[in-house]
Structures are given as structure tokens and as C-alpha cells.
Length: 361
Ligand code: 1CP
Image (tube, rainbow, N blue to C red; front, side, top):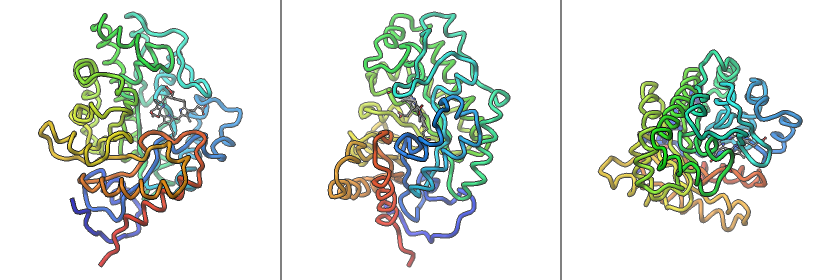
């Protein structure tokens, strides 16, 4: 694919931003770059803003959501902002008892094991989250030409926290429910699809330019189990979001064996972790017979802790491999680690933007 030249023009709306052009597979002024979990503990200004404030409270205060979402845009000059929230916050807003424990993640004291547990899960509505709508409207106005990405947790990854009761390595209880009580599993996953649809809709209706559905832990599943127990529910989310016409991005870790199926679920852009080169990812996405799609990724976050002499050739390789796709959004293969050096992320952003820039003739 030839990422042809387009003139760089001042932007006041995100419509012609590098991020949205790449997500639509159109010619870009430069390869856009942003980082998953770009807002967060790696930034001293984030730690200061969050001091003494719980995650839940910070997500209900528009002033804090706006400030924290903008911090990485200011510091790194990234091509997109991602709405500051968490995958479990819509459940919290809907009154579900799940806590985000510092240094651990989402923890539920009363994991879901039966139909009564499933019944306690209900999607948020715009009326439950006026602060979300307010924060996004304000962000969109402050961001100008920089797009805001809305996001939600995919049914499997959300379910893993609710069924296991917290972060898990093997998802044993979640898999036991899938195989041992498939009706209960499907009822839970269907409700979680509705949670994702509701939260994503609120974000897009308030002005988010794109959505990303995080199925971070789907890579723990075999393709067979993914197809049977997970894909229909994620597909429901993508199908429901289609009417908005915004790019729909799908990402998970360790999903090399699932890239075709995750693409087929309805993604417009396929997120790739560091394990599969982007050109190979494009082959896997198209192997099922579909058209090639834009990809997002995929610098190994561990390399942030090496020297620039290691990072630079890795970026060059990723930019070259990304040319195999009709669009490439540069990102890490997973989230920014909390102990990453912000200066390294700033330098990566600038390098990608300059190195990939097309100078108008
Ligand atoms: O850039 C940003 O604005 C960050 C916003 C953001 C996002 C996109 C947060 C804030 N969480 C998420 C998504 C999220 N949350 C995912 C999908 C992305 C990914 O794979 O990284 C997942 C799996 C979670 C669950 C979660 N929440 C974890 C991981 C736990 C595990 O299983 O290993 C953790 C540590 C949290 C808490 C959390 N979410 C966000 C922040 C800043 C934090 C830290 C808590 C705090 O500061 O109190």
C-alpha cells in the first residue's frame, strides 16, 4: 500500500486528523501515534491530580476527567486522546459493587456464579452519567482537531473480572462457567455487551470520534472457544455501534491466533500486540477472505526500558511493516507501564510523526 501524500492543513475538527484518516484507510500526512493507557501513573501530573481521590470519584468529576485526558496530549503531542475512565466504571455508575484497588485493578467481593449475580448487572444510561456527557463535550471542544477515542471493555474481559472476582492469569472460573453453565455464561456476556453498547453510545453521542473495544484478555482462549463463547457477544457490540459511522477498533493481548476472528467480529481497525508483526497481522486478518484492514500497534512496552538505540530501529521496522495495511496507527503492543519514562514516550511520538511525514510536493 502506498500511503500517498496529502497536504498538512490546520485542523479545527478531527474529521481530517491523521488518526481518523488512518482508521478509515485514507492517505495520511503522517502515521498517527497514541499510547494505550497514556493517561496514568507514568505521568507526575497524573499522580498529582489523583492524590487522595479514588478512581471512581475521579471518573465522576468532569474537571478531573478533562484534565487527566488532556495531560498526555500536552506532554507527548499524541494524535489522539482517550477518554479517562476504566472498563469497569460503567458497572460502578450503574450501582454494581466492584472496586478498583490501587496497584491491583478491578476487584469484586461477590463474584458472579449464578443467575441472581447476572441479574445484578445493568447497563448505564445517559441519565446515570451526566458527568460523562459533560466531560466529553468539554474535551471535544478543548481538543479541537485532535480526536477523542471512546472505549469500553468487551464482554469476555469484563466477565473475567466479575466471575473471577479480580485479575486472573488462567480464567479458570470463567472458562468453567462457559463450558459447565453455557446458558448462564451467554446471559452474562449478553448483558455485558449491553453495558458496552450503552457506555460507548453515551461517549459517541457526546462527541467521541472513534471507539475502541478492549478484549485485553481474550488471548487466553482457544479460537474454538472464542468463536463459540465470545465472538457473538463482541459482534453484537460492533453491530450496534455501526449506525454511528465512527471507526471501531478492537484490541486484545496475545491474540495472534484470534486476529481473524476478532476482525470478523466487526472491527474496522485491528489492534495487534508485539507478538505478531503488522504485515503478518494483515495476512491473518485477510486469510478468512475479507479485505485488508487498518491495523494499530505494536511496539513492545518492555522496550521502553531499553535505550534509544534499541527503540529507534524497532520503530523503523514497525513503520515499514505497517505499510502492508491500508492504514497504520502507531501504538504500543499493550498499555504504558506505570514506571515508564514520559520522556521516552514523548521522543517516540515525535520520531514517528517526523519519520513517517509525507512532505507535500
Ligand atoms: O490513557 C488513559 O486515559 C487510561 C484510561 C484507562 C483505560 C483505557 C484506564 C484507567 N483503564 C483503561 C482500560 C482497562 N482497564 C483495561 C483495558 C486496557 C488494557 O488492557 O490495559 C483493562 C484490562 C482494565 C482493568 C484494570 N483497571 C487494570 C488491569 C488489572 C489486571 O487485570 O491486570 C487496572 C490496574 C485498572 C485500574 C486503572 N484503570 C485506569 C487507571 C489509571 C488505573 C489505575 C488505578 C488508579 O490509578 O487508582
